Image (tube, rainbow, N blue to C red; front, side, top):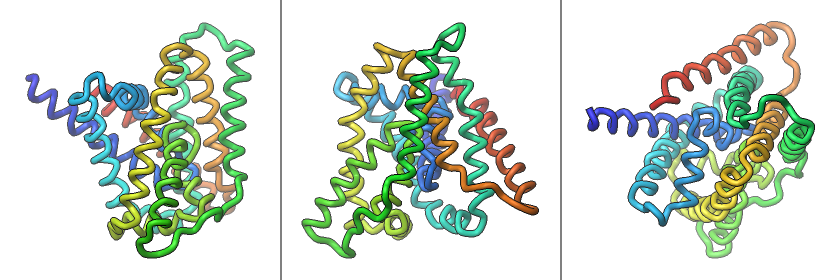
Length: 276
């Protein structure tokens, strides 16, 4: 029975990692938000921040999610890009529905009997930060093709910046890639497994994640209400960030259906994967 549970847990972590990795390819969708929606954000942050305390167990957990995430990125980078180009609004409405479905479960973690004024202000601050990220100028950095020491250094720095977006729910790593002028190139690099590009970027991302996770884990333990309300604000802001504009004509019905499908998919994922 124990072995069966271990196999189920392993498959669940791979599946959740796959979903998180695939979601990170969509501009406006936060990998941190998706981790929260799947109920693994606290677990991942704790494992990263306390890696040395129980290295074998924490490293195994992180690697399982990372393997699933990498598979999601590599296998779905092409289809996701094609879907976004062909059905931009329906795809983004799908993710909007999923994000909205995830807000009530996060609020239950706040453990308050009523909404207090300070909690509303904290959530508003998080939403404002997430929305403001959308208006940062795009194309700040375009890496050169091929390998060079300076290019690798820039990719390391870019990875560190992207890691902050990955850690903070509501801040889209893909949008940060767009801001840096690296989105299409990164998708192509993952799709074609271009190691000269992927490896330094990945090292930078890992360095940034380990640097930020400890701070966030401490805040979640010491100030849970403040931290979760801030996260809820990030999630609310990410809905505005994902919003592609009002559909028209037949697209209204299609977008309504995909939003409902996103909402339902999140609820099903929470039921099937959340307890695993």
